[in-house]
Image 1 (cartoon, one colour):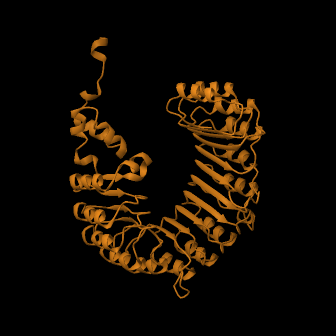
Image 2 (spheres, one colour):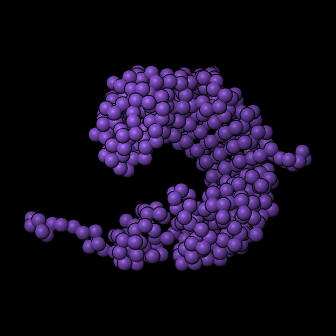
Length: 459
């Protein structure tokens, strides 16, 4: 074949193909590519590319966009926009939300988390104009239970809801049960009410919710301090197809309730997140019978519980398809976890991509287990490596070549030779933390940055 005729130029592709490629990009990337040439600028103004605006995907984008810019996007592409995420945009006001409501009548998903200036005035406009809404997040916004109730009456086809903060969560849940037809995803972030007579999310609230929506696939219960194991029994009896289960800081929950959910939903669970549940122990995994297998479980996060290495290992034994394991103890340092679970995780979970251990000191044996069994791991948080040798660290670097995120702390054996190894073997690395590793110098870091320019290095 003639080499002159075998060359290929991106701009020679049909516009329809280029648009499909552009559609895979983030909001920030699409905005940057508009500067390349006039043709790309024209293509990137195509309505088909602007079905979603996500300001939460990039902190830089979030810092640059303001009311005026967002309103111009809404005015230009509002007819086709179906998803808007403005979470943590403190400058979002009711006026902007009203513009969204008027211009984006086909809106299906709206995330207002952290937008405390948004009140019932803005959400009422959404209720009046965006009746096709399927997903709403009003957590930490200024929306009250009254405004939220009016939204539900106008948008009965909502499938995903996240609520909490200003509005009373108990009353909001009552409105959900009365007005929504087929809820799939619920996230409840309750707070202890200031007034003694105010209702709270309790066992009865959860029973009503689960019996109203037996097809729930995802549930997140956070700060629900008044629910007990009886509430979780409602999940096990009604919601057999639960795929995602998150429960955090619900201090009356014990092994009995969590075990009931895990045993009934074991075939469908994909994500399990347990955090700050100090009554959860190894009894969850060991007594009275063995846990059922979790064939679909891909993500396990256990933070600040009383589960030990034995308990984590037992769950890992039953979950061969795990891709993400995040385990640790941040608060009060009860020291139940020392890293022994890593052997089982490394041997049983061959598909693991993410391993983060926030407790105990790493040992050479742990690193050897990871490097020998998990060559495809891409996110590795090792934490305190003061007892690790240069040999064990070198094996991690040379065997785990797909690493994109790596954290090592307090290790004197991280030297300039280690940095050279990283530059040779970890070409995909985008984030490196080498905190309190005192054998490396600023020159070593700069040299690594020169060789791996995409890598963000913190030391």
